[in-house]
Image (cartoon, rainbow, N blue to C red; front, side):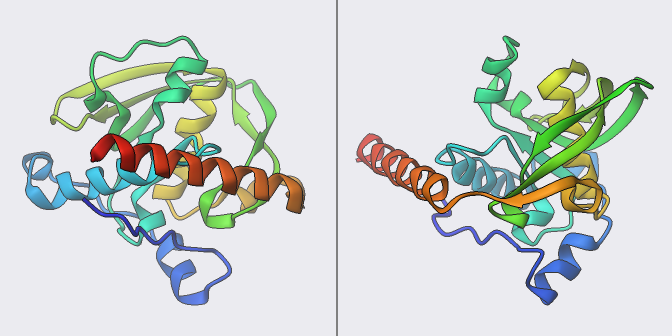
Length: 195
């Protein structure tokens, strides 16, 4: 299990090149391979202790593959049940339907850390993707989940939220410290559970 995932940052020129690339599809027969499963495990491990994290795309850890994961708390927040943890993983997602109506919503990003702004996102979206077990599924989503899907698919296309955002501003030092403290608490809890 990976303990030190590096999140690529927009303000680092070399890392930004990776973030800006259009990611490659994963061959369906490769989904269950050790390589792809390790990428997914590493991403899940990282996201587990991020109190302000909604999701994570593979390019953010330097891997240009069309994979993103969504934190279980997002599904809880929208009162949406998932069949298994495999359904937190979205491989080769494709937007198959999007509402014309959109709303400006607050967003942030691990790769544009501590910056927030509003991005106009479609209110409703339908995507098709493989889950971690290699099962192809169709997901309809509105509100927060639709926003997360659009943000993460943008990552796979080399687009960052800050490219589209209005009213960009940096989070206060006080709020940043609060999030960092919570993250440290979550990491300690995880270590205790694994002992």
